[in-house]
Length: 348
Ligand code: PHE
Image 1: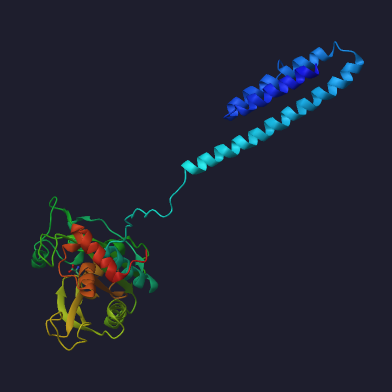
Image 2: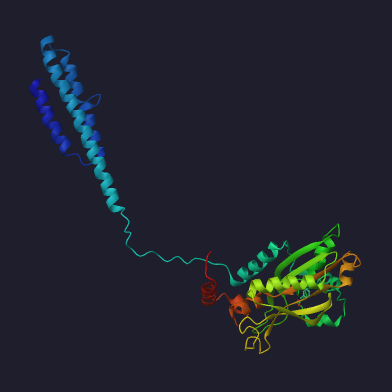
């Protein structure tokens, strides 16, 4: 019996030595410790032995069983560690490799300028609203004091879709829409950014461009409010030292109408090529809302007055950043977009 156990132990050690992975280890475990394994087999032989022999060999067999268990467990840990190391070895990441350059997107220059202008007016209590780009003649012209046949319609070469529907030529129709929609006919303070369309194209004109419209309606609104508002705008966009001036102009929907100039930020008003040696740069059109326009949208011009302005963010951006061709904004040339980000400093 003793001999059998000693031989079995030798065989076990040999088997264990030949084990290369966890699967093989399990086979060895079953062979020795399984229900039909060698150790179980020896245990059953034990039943036929005398009490003396049982005592002697029983202990011996038990020690062997414990040893088998211990050695199997040790081997299991060894194999697991080995497998982990192998995995770590093959899945190693080389952190010294140069990283792949992932191009990061940024906001379009025009979006930045529009947002900057929006933020300024929102900080003064304005709401930002939008209107449709496909517009009725009614809002684009008629309710703005431009009846059919009015000569000033020609100044805005329009894309007509039908006789009554066109691509809006300016953001001013939103004035009429907002005034009309305002049920209690009370005060209004809005700006409206959006795309507009005209049959025009050269270095400073595009068939599609953007405008930002401003409209303030309340009791007692005067030109002084318009001037104060635009002065804050000019200083924020072009620098604290800027001043503005008004020149008389004409728009059918405002009376009086003006064009606003900002003192040249390049030469400080002394005269340079940017301001064509005048010291002043035109930035927008504006005026006091025409009484006809108020009346057509249900406002009483005896009670309410208001001012409106319309500016081109492209023009503001071109002036501010020295961009010489409006088409740069729409052709998506990466060199231009990257250049612009360098000037602005990309913090997004
Ligand atoms: N809508 C005018 C334009 O497109 C600009 C403007 C807006 C003028 C509001 C006065 C008041 O030229």
